[in-house]
Length: 243
Ligand code: G3P
Ligand code: CA
Image 1 (cartoon, rainbow, N blue to C red):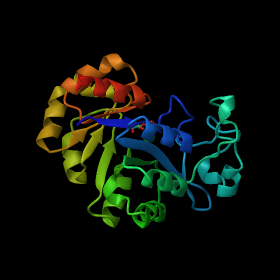
Image 2 (tube, rainbow, N blue to C red):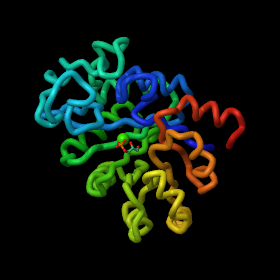
Image 3 (cartoon, rainbow, N blue to C red):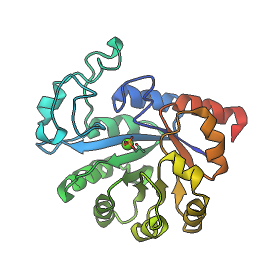
Image 4 (cartoon, rainbow, N blue to C red):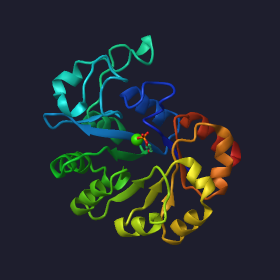
């Protein structure tokens, strides 16, 4: 089965990394819902992509310089469309509560830097809801993955990469990751790395194929899933018998 991964939720129909985007992703047939976790100055995990709140909210400043109350007061919907005015940046807890009610799996990206205490808090919130077995925890930062592995030896990990390199397969073996998720262009241009990862038992889910014309070549290259902003279209494509 090809994983239909909703990148930051169904982020073409609702503001990325918000509860409506996650709800829409589930309704649109996502098998995995991806989102980004950062921690506020006072230690609350929230779901937001950028280092700052500037692009996706009515406020300014770095996430780790703001308290949760300051972030909760911001409008995280108006930038996307007037119909979303008043949406808040969700906490990780709110996001997990919503997704726990469905059956889609979770692709939880921990954005660096993340201290051990912050990683502990994030993992604990997954564990409290019995969601660890339904989750893949991914990061661009190998050190974050090592911290997660040290806390929960059995959880599935994903290494995010901007580019494959000569060490990719060895790094994935060392980190014992289930997934290696690179930029989509590398999947298409490095069949030898794809073969090495398959040999190592590591699955690949590239980001962010939004152009449907790329889906067939990526499937033919052996991907396990596609991390896209267009998860509804991807569900339609799969249901039409394309895979
Ligand atoms: O899940 C892959 C993708 O989300 C990684 O890039 O910048 O969108 O978090 P970014
Ligand atoms: Ca992400």
